Length: 275
Image (cartoon, rainbow, N blue to C red; front, side, top):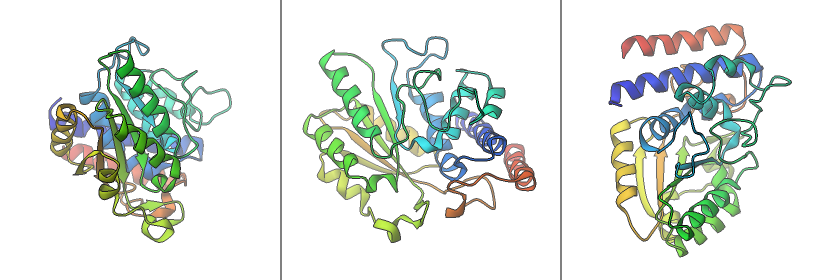
């Protein structure tokens, strides 16, 4: 897809996020919106996947370590054709397969259940190691929140990945600077993030999380890098695309009311019209 098509897809994904969280009257819009462009690039450009065959053996694997941004993940899967977009309105409803966190047993396209922060990296490392042992062609991608990397398990997984030279593995950090309690640097600063991953023998690339050309270059470099895993530190805007949600920690886990929903959708419609 060209850049314009990716931007349009990402905007539709953001609409799905807002719609799902509003319908559920709960959920996590802020981080879903900040990661929407990353998810768009992965699922529409980067990864070897097939919605008609979600369990095919040679597919690339994705682990959403920050599982609470399930609305963003589900909206991406729906736009990519894994299940109907209409089903997003059932998020967190009793009896819906679209639970509050990703569930690999019931949701097409989900490779790993997640939600307990810090654990996704370990699962992704296991998948990458299995790929190496099997001489398989697939690659593994794992998306973290920047607040999430305050968890020690992330660094244990990183140490193992670097030591085992898992060059089929890409860690991505959605660096929007905010977590539920405020600025990440005030809660428990993980900075400097890039230097930490370099210390664990990662190839580190820093990008703008909303620039598809930078993403293309970063993922290309990751594929070309041999003998070490890659960490992409993606600087993003929490709540991206919705005027009153941008850079507001209060929208980490708050659902919009009817009036706010209408405003959010109007913001995204305006963006869509400008593309």
